[in-house]
Amino acid sequence: MDDLWSAIDADRWQETPCLRGRVAVEQDVKDGRAVFYIQDAEQTGVVPVDIGLPHCAIFTEDGQSIPVVIVQSEQADAHTVGYRPLSGGNGICTIAEVELLERPDERFYRYA
Image 1 (cartoon, one colour):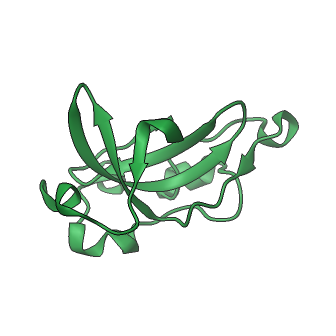
Image 2: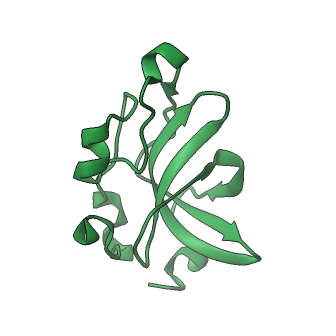
């Protein structure tokens, strides 16, 4: 699984595998297209939210701006996204915790 969540080339961020048009299932996480899945998504009313995936963004944590690529966007009780930092790894947060970028800016490339 380490290779699934390796660093992302900032110049090729648009090639990052992502999930479009449906909610994630376990296989999507195993294949690296999604970061999370909800076991009974259909019964609990989870729906995909189209924000144009993959989508470059800035996630702020403890005052630090972290460039990420959002690979998943779903709405249940809250609008939740799965993301991949450029440096590698993955994470989950609400849409309110990221700043969606129309295109990469200097903050996005800062850590490339």
